[in-house]
Image 1 (cartoon, rainbow, N blue to C red):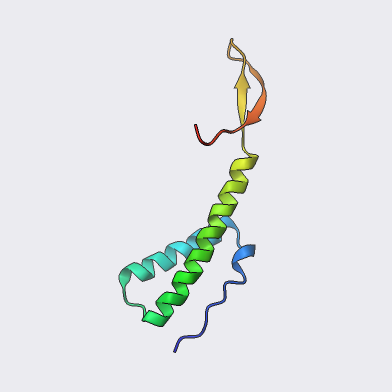
Image 2: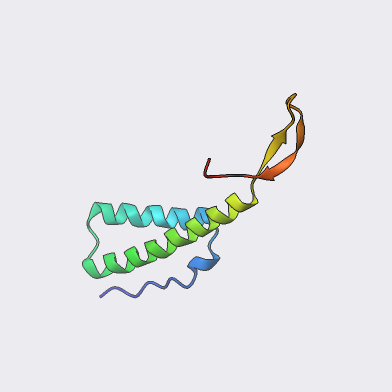
Length: 85
């Protein structure tokens, strides 16, 4: 029986670390050589890591601004980035 994997630390991980761990989990699951119980545990951690990455990306998008230009192409200021366009 494998030891339980804690997800308590996920909320403190920076984006790059969370993404790396998520990539490692996906690679292990794709190989298919992980026992079922451990697969369930690391899949659950993967879900927590994905949620963390999504939250950090949304925070970053909210902080990004685009430069607004006048009719002659000169910068006039900034406006929130509309990521849906």
